[in-house]
Image (cartoon, rainbow, N blue to C red; front, top):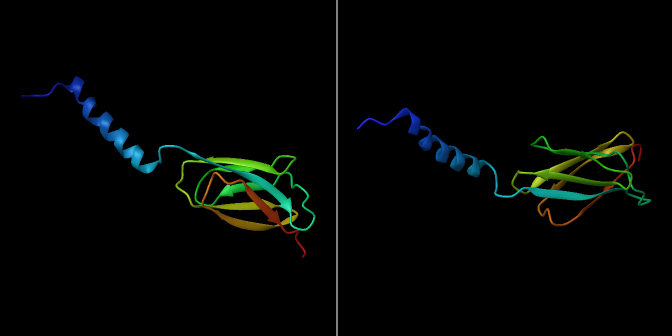
Length: 108
């Protein structure tokens, strides 16, 4: 029996669905927190926060807060950069916990 070309897509759709569920977990993780000065506790605005092996990125707001949504499986490594502070890497294993990241000024 010969299959009709109109029904051939029925085989491809389930294969596509199953292959994407293996790549991405069922639900994205939202990693959030605050960037502060190591010594003074002052909130750091415009710190660039990104995930090492992805395209997810964020800038901290005027209160030092940031939020990144990722489909990557945890743990992930966050990198925090600011022109006036030393670059810092932080490994995140639990997205439900707010991150408090302390940056040290350059020149110290």
